[in-house]
Length: 502
Image (tube, rainbow, N blue to C red; front, side, top):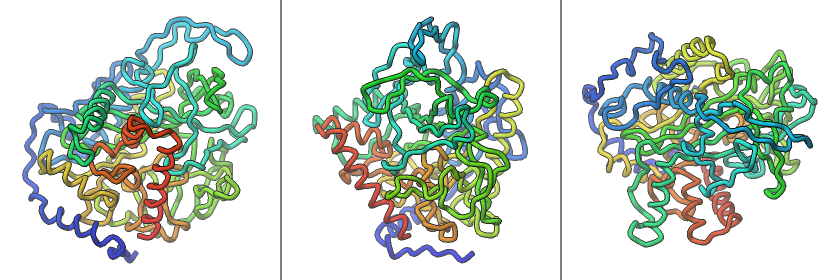
């Protein structure tokens, strides 16, 4: 396929990238500062580690000084290993809940009797916050609160499930919850206070510290899933509200999770994503179709051709084709029109094979255990190549790249799954193009298409890669939720147009 980069549309930004690339240090032999050599296994070996299992004992991955990331030359595999281990650590069943009696479907029902919740639902380990990083007040008898139905990059796009998949044959709305760990929350508070006091300029080179973690999780009412399949999903009870005022405790199932964390030498965060196995098929670009022989949660039995299932129609306020949601690229790794890998900034097939490898070995280990987590898979992650740079240079790269951080053509900085997306959270922004045929290396969509080192008011800093932190600052400055959403939407429209024009 002929590559069409169309550099002239972003001449200034591209020139800055070329300048940064020309300054990049020559790769040196890896300087391993860690004794955990197993974390750098060859791709032909199983990439998961024996100490990750049993799941109830998965340790938090090493990610600071002395970790596999504390080197001038990283391997592709360690980012995938961090992603899976972090997910396993977050979902391990460790949080004991006291007996509570709550109203559920009009009846007083005892909940959480002897139940053990996963670590990420422990409020001491992860704080549930709203889109402005403000703590969410929890409700009695519920493990979390669900109000948000906003899709990433598309405030008007509301994801609905395939009614044929559900117990009641009724389409349900997908909801989202957001979490940050104490490290990120404390750092965010310090950054906010310093900016408000004027001791830290709004334009700065500050970064969130290693260990900072942000999650976004997608959920749907248990009734959206048939009785014979619900055992394959993690379920709990959420206080669900459609107006932010009236809440009802409802059994919900976990669909997907973004795991976004800072490790040594990577102030841009690693952006990893996980999905349930039975939600949607992958698009087969070679055959130009997505198909499923049985009903899935987001895809009705049958076949679709083209992109209409993942395009939101502002007029009808529905997808162009209902219940035809699919993952545009398996593991977020872009394919060309003949089914081969696109020529990008990420070497393939090593990246694709590493993701496939680690999914296979993790699933094989989880199959031996009781619980639903074996039915979730890792759909890839994306990060920036910062090898050989100092921490200051890393921050300068992020600020210098600005909105072009998402570029994926050869010699760009992006690595990993270059069309990284979650089918439940970026359903309608898996691409910015209006047809499959127009998707090429110059216009791929990924997490960095929206998340970059530029704030809603155009200041530059690595800390603005987090949208909830950006909104946190704006709220502290007195902006209302509606004003913040307007600023966010304005920036997303500009970025959408820029990505469409590439």
